[in-house]
Every structure is written in structure tokens, then in C-alpha cells.
Image (cartoon, rainbow, N blue to C red; front, side, top):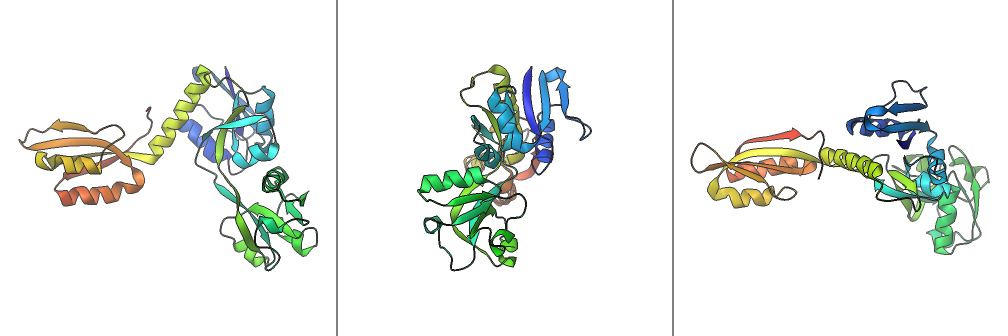
Length: 282
């Protein structure tokens, strides 16, 4: 039975549970449940603190886990990313008072406050910068005002909270994070149950990204229509009862669907429909 670690709370928990449900896996009904067994899919889910998941997976006690790329790197655990999941995205940046520094190269000799000292220490080492890193939990913006540090490193979304604290972002992003599937470093990459799990999640990702588009068009316009809807391999084309017309079906990116419908209509296509894709295998 495949043993999988899942975030028990926080911004990763809800989207992870939703994705697993879409992939056909049983999920817990109450937040108090720490372990559930899905016998039909031969999977056992363990609901753990997101920061601990990489440690459990690296120990070999659990086969794979869902956590944040930031938490994986920050843990220093012997685990590796095998599939990005596209949710819980965040950006890590340095920030300080205006005029203090322009980039990471100016941070030598400073003290940097962060909740992710593993990430920051690795980034500084990679850049050859000698600075001190102090760990703080929670909001770190006040660390500079209270004299604990000259610089902070934290998740930045709009930058509003930093500006309200009189700080500005400096340098390039430290890293871009999102939810990822991880496994123990060196684990069997071709283990059948793991590959099946990954295929299901990849199917969910594709289903969320694409829609199915159907339309009718005149045969003489088919080549131009197909150029707009090439599909993943090629579209399905079927003759209609009315001579000179064909029906076309293809997967198209959801974000482009309305524009493609406009272009098809201008080309003379009619009965243009889009439908959601609930699951797929490619």
C-alpha cells in the first residue's frame, strides 16, 4: 500500500485535498482525522504538519508527500521534487530600509531575519555572501524596527505590508515556490504505484488547464480552423450529413478558449461549444 503525506492545515491543505479528490482518492471528512485508508486505490494518507513532511519522506517511512518547494528546501531533508502542482505559489525576496542595500551582493556582514533560514543560508552560500541569519516565526517585518536585523527575507505578494513597514524589496527573488510532490532522494523512480499516483495528478493538472472544443465548419476552411485548434496530437474530424461540412473536436488551453471561439466564428465555424474536462490520461 502506498503511504502518502498530505498537509494537515494551512494554505497547502485545502487545495491538496481538492486535487486528490479530483484524482479519485478518498479524503478525510473531519480535520481531526490524522490517517485514512483508501483500500480501493491501495493508498494510505497521513495528515502531517507541512514543515515536517519532507523529514518523514526522507526517512523512508512514507513513500511520497505533498508539501511546498520552500519547505522542502528549508528542511534540508534528503528528499527531492518530482512533480510541481501549480498551487500555493509564492515568491521569496529580501527587503530592507531604503538606502541600505541594492542587492544580495550588498548584504555581507548584515543580519537577516527570516522564518526560512535554510533557504536563505543556501542562497547566500550560492552567491558567496557572508551574512548572519536569525530565525523568527511569524511576521518578520518588525525585526528591523526593533534592531534584531538589518534585512528580512520573506514571502512577498503585493509588497503592501513591507511598504507599510517602511521597507523596500531589493535584488532578484530568492526563489519561486509552489506545492510539489516529493520523494526520498534515490528512491525507485519507476515504482508502479508511485507512477500511477503521478499520472492521476498530471491528469488533473491537464484537465484544469484545457477544455474540449467542438465546432462545425465548411471543409474548405478546415485547414485554417485546425491551425487554430491543433489539439495535443491532432483534432478529431468527422463528416456531417450536410455535404461540405465537417465536425471538429480538439483540446484547447482554457485561457485561450474565448479568443479561439471568436477566431473560429470569424472563419465561418458554427455550433462552437466548450466543455470542461474532469479527468484525462495523456
